[in-house]
Image (cartoon, rainbow over all chains, first blue to last red; front, top):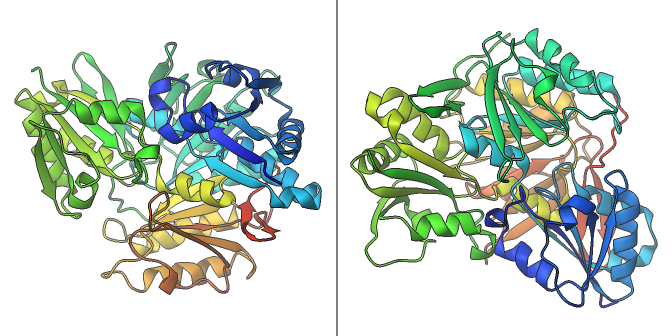
Length: 254
Length: 254
């Protein structure tokens, strides 16, 4: 089997975040698979097939791309951000585990990218400068009770929390519930960062506080960072504030 | 004040992970500051001052670079990985908050990079494919009791755990204690990944299990990923295994 599959992280979207390794993998592909809007970010090159699919079809997309590569082609699956963070790399591994034994012989490369929480954090300072968690708020693939348990654990132990997939049309109430739950552990003044389309022309990064945070600020393209008790906001005249979590922590909270 | 400060993430070390934005910031700098081994990764360019300092001197380095930029220069502080993850961006924010009021007027850009956990995860599959935490095991800047509390919270709530700074010469026992603590929550067969120098010529990524993991496998340049109860290992004939955490989780563990 001479095929090859690469799962490539495009980063936040702007080419200035695309690593040379990712660019090279894209240039060398015979076929590209991905969610339509991500594929649209990849320049068209002669001789490359493009297979766009819907957002919810990760496993079908992974299986199609693996099968294509296993027939001897050089195939790329594109992923927004980093493919290993709430994205395509896990779906590819799932398909390889459950698929034909021959798929395990396929050459696979996973090309990391700048995931949304790093792009948003960089825009506003260093909110992830100390221990933190990354948690998807989507209860499509896990029970809401488990999400609540993880929010409780993370907030009470003092982790900063990066929330992926905070809101979608099918999940209107979850984000509000999550904020209410976090308010039981954290002061009303806890900094909350909403980062939308970080690193793209329509980028918007806003800082608010936990008591003022609202689901209206978020959509599917938003990454939310909820600070810990240690997270600080530094006002700057005529500039956006810096939000950061100090490297030192002293509190062993109850 | 016409100076500018950029805090630039170099990624794991190899130029193929350096984003165009980071490359451009490095090329445009009049002065570079950083931990010596990180500075050594940056190509020398005519007319650029270089100010190397020791690993432990983050705040002094940040203050020197900010002061230099505030006098009207274009200054870069280099950081391994991503500057916002256990790296220089938080130190810069700390100095700006505590320094002269005029420093708040300085133009600052933080340039994200591929942090070690993303590079290591990509090398081995998708161990961070579901909810995860990033935790520094260094007790130089926080009490060990707080680290234990966070390990307890993360493991019992089912987060995968990425451990930064697992071991140093001055911290010989902490990593072993952390593994022992995690063993109270997780089965002996839980996958553990040791990634050393991921993305560099001397890269080494090993997979073991929690009961076999040992501090001897780790040093300052190692990033350790401890799986959750859901994390899986897919054996592949003649190839390294794939380690991944499925996107779906069903268990609401006690």
